[in-house]
Length: 459
Image (cartoon, rainbow, N blue to C red; front, side, top):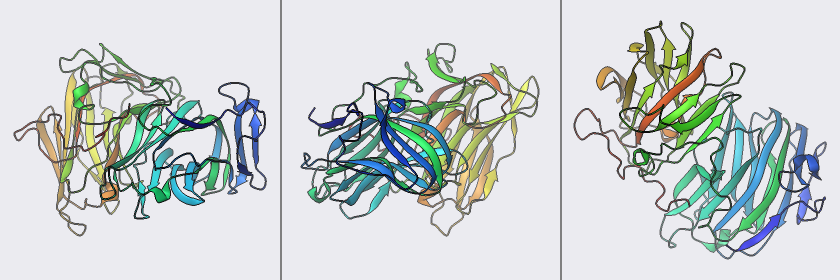
């Protein structure tokens, strides 16, 4: 690795930055309160305003648009700020090159990666939930150059604690004109009146994008150790969030469909806010796809639910806040739960199947096969909802075509629901595809190249 710089804040002041900006009423300082490593970190305190407050480090050590930037981050408090905020930014002589953003949309905090390409177009990642924001985690941006000036195979990643959370693929990112030489930590853009305090520590930039700045850890993520091919070989990445008392792990108890390990998601304390605990996968579909498939096994036999309690066992998030999909589980009685599928279409209309009973004591295979409409003006999309291989219902005549409503994040677990729900949900054999091949009409679901993601794997 070739480190350009590392801002440890151990000088006890802001002298490691080339320049700083402190908005009126706000505070930017080296503080012991903000220290993750050593004695000092960077404290950014915004006091009910939209005034940018940040530190900037200038460095001309890069010759091409390739780098890794990493830092420890914790949001100590947060209210307001209904717009989009910038928590890290890179620039070329003051011109925008890329950002890590966070926002609040009424459903919670979300992250997004934005990169400017060679055509001066801003390219956006999906917006997964911001995991465990009030605890320390290591954030890392990785920028990979395209292979030539005419190629569109550049890549950008946002990793947390060494795991990819969001990515942007197929970037036209080769020209040296936007090689970054300014790096900004703090709130360089505040979209709505914000009161909050965020901490940064050990901010660094490296010119080698192939080596991680942080060794992978699993504070809130889990892999299905015995069955990686169903998502890793297809190129899906991992993330997750644990609310108060919740947990996610990989164990034998949660193994379904004859495997030796699965995902064990514990709902945690009833006092925990949503989302309590989930594991999420971020994907980016290539252009020209005809639909997508969700296929997994679940077991709710160890859940404690009250009659009519329900929760989102799966929430599928798109780039458009309100165009989401849900698989909802509700207790009917001690013997049966009820399950249904919901899809918000391009007009933000909720299309929902009926509720179907499944036995509490058994594992079940849940599958949804979605075919997009043929054009933005057509309403000929459909969604088939299967339980244990049996077609329960088809939602027809769907207005579901627009790109910003298509899946970017798939979150399994306790995303939202009744606080009284306790104990364990088991998930296994997750298969996600960006095409509309029906596994029950021949061919089956197998890992394959339909998901064009991670051509160059994050190390």
